[in-house]
Image 1 (cartoon, rainbow, N blue to C red):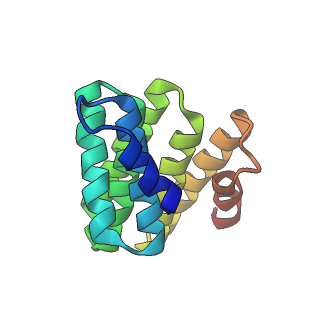
Image 2: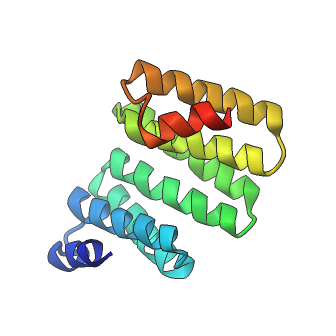
Image 3: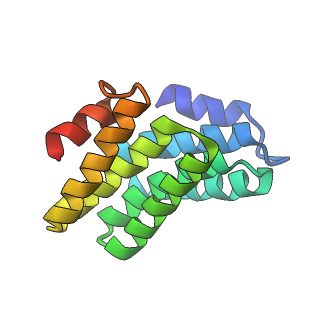
Length: 149
């Protein structure tokens, strides 16, 4: 956490850059993991705005994935699903397979948690196939996709 906070201190907010979006998204994700949802949301929103201003679809995807997770924690399933789907699309368009896999796996978890078991299974199967094609079969999301599917 200390390293993430230091990164956002070192990278100026102006002008908007992909690097600033990346470090803000990294801090948001770290905060989300620790349960600091409000602060995580603030950093994820900054990361999203910065990525858009800098024209970085890849960093936009990272921020969208974290926002999707945060929306799901607020029980806004439709918004979470939409954000994760957009994250997956943007990651796929940029060729960032690890980020695409993260979004796909999180979509599967969302569907599993809300009881859409067939959709979850299909989503996890697609994630597992993506992981294998991309050499990410033994990554955390690759393994999760196989185990949960």
